[in-house]
Length: 348
Image (tube, rainbow, N blue to C red):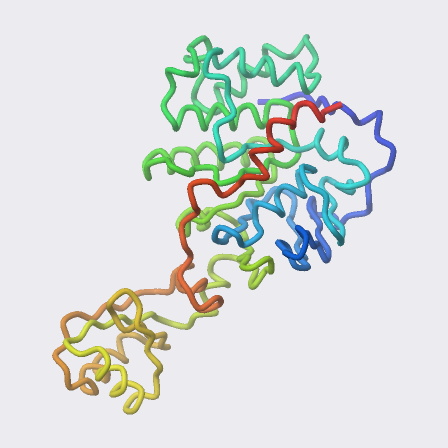
């Protein structure tokens, strides 16, 4: 399948593309955003490569929503630079917006219209040529598995179907980069898995770069690379495997009849410092299988359970920040919501 290119705003660009590495489509250097005395983003540096799925992982208030808002030209940075698709987001926002697709966390479809009518409105805003508009709408609906529901009112769609339609809308104008803000928030695990099947297929067929924010650890596993952000700073970047190597070989958790006594015995006999977490003692060791017999021998209190597992991204976040990642609050993206309504109005 081929989607013909239509890039509104390109001829009106006042500045040319900034130099970028051959494989980079997003480049950020020293990015800072302040709200009065509060520094929401504190000097972020990152590069996103062409065609990859890049994940921005962090809790509410970490700065990920502010960062994605700056990259999508919805907020202005206080200092630093950001280039998207080769253009400076502050000097040439129109050129950036013409080359990106954006899927907000909150629903933004008109549920009184059909799926096709929602896409036709988007095509009109983005100046998709009339000659190819219908064909392109048909193509993106098929790509997300909604070809047979083109004439259905959106209010009859499930949450997963609405999310797929929003993704179809995000790629309708053939963007180079697709920004997804919490793309599967509130969806059940099976629907989340299907959404990611469609996203991976889009990446394969169109070569689109995907930049996503999430607080779901399992969702971050779909990413080629991940940046963990906390308190406005990126604390680690790399592939999932590279990040997990920061933890160590295995994670051992033990529940005893007296965790306080067991903790002291383990520290004294095994030179390991357990962390009491969720009712169990958690330890990072090189070889869990070899460690467990020594653990049992060192603890005098009755042992109720022992588990050994490979490190997860939860463990990485805990190691880097000293706490487990927390779920987003019900209203985490106030700035995105407020400005999202103005998105189309700023497209000129």
